[in-house]
Image (tube, rainbow, N blue to C red; front, side, top):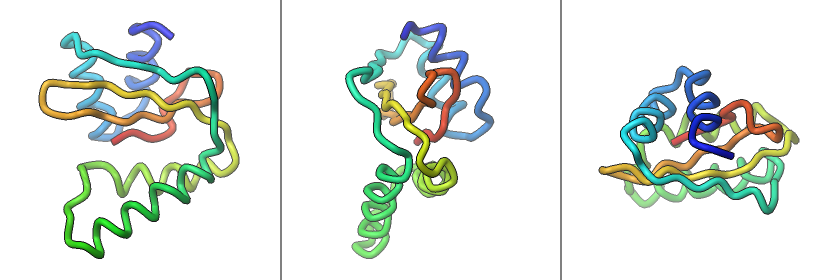
Length: 108
């Protein structure tokens, strides 16, 4: 997956996190798409919803967009997704892409 394709997938997502990620990507941030395996959004929801809950229980503020991303992973159900990261100037973003890599399923 090239930069233009990732930008296209993010540009279709109106979330605050996707817009912030897109801005970093357009500014030249490094990115990596992990194409060696997919996972079901349901499995990832299970992991990330638990992590989110633990953060809240321990008083650790989750990164912006995590709660929305967890909700969107749950809504995606058993769909297969790929993970990507964008390392921006202020933070690293996590992105989950549809199996055909054309859409952002969740981002934070």
